[in-house]
Amino acid sequence: MAKKNARRNVYKKSAGRKMHRVRRVSLFLLKAFLVLGSVAILSSVMIFCHDLLTQSACFEIRTVLIEGCRRISPSEVREWAELDQKTNILSVNIKALQRRLTGHPWIKSADIRREIPSTLHVKVLEYTPVAIVDCGRRLLIDDTGRIFKKVDHGEEIRVPVVTGLRMSDLEVDGGNALPFLETVLAVTRLARAEGSILPFGSISAIHLDKEIGLTIYAFDSDTAIKLGFENYPEKFNRLREMMPYIESQQGMLHVKSVDLKDTRRVVVKQRALDSKEV
Image (cartoon, rainbow, N blue to C red; front, side, top):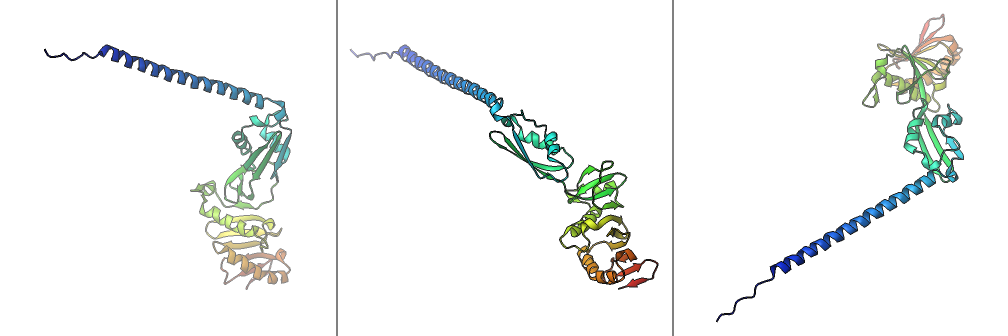
């Protein structure tokens, strides 16, 4: 008689697999619980340490070193920064402090760093004014043509006053100054160069006529130095060549105008006298 095959114990095998899955899930949950518990404990410790450090008297600001001040005073920077002796140096938000300082009309940028435990270094970069543009309002522009503040009543700033520009001429196009403003900036750059024949500090006014170009008034006189448009380096050099002659005619005080619009034909007009072409 044929021998029957033994039946497999399906129930026992299924129960074993089920127990294995339960153990695996339980182990995963235990690991997850341990990880989450460790993270929670670590977070609590870090928060405790943070609070301990940022509230500790050991890290209170005792010294604020301020550099870069020319027009504004260190005390004004400190006041604008809203820092006092009880501020914890670790609690200072550097980015927020930089934004606060650059909100000052004269501060272009600010570099701030901590020196643990109690010293804060603040280095400010101020705007460099190159002209006051009088276009109904008196506005200060820097060497890039950016308007950075309005001239306050009674505020004295020794830079040339520019007339003949409108507010629309001061707008910035793609980060570059518009043509008429760039014309003014080109002359101020030459005037600020070392050894310039028209030193920046000697220029009191610049007038822009959109038809004939720039006219400069300098040397504490009302002598008109007519530069027109373009080729300003060449015109500055031509004026340098002309200065011995002008000095021989008793200087700028006795000269009504110097016309340099065409460097091949310079016209010097003396006061109450005939014009002389040089």
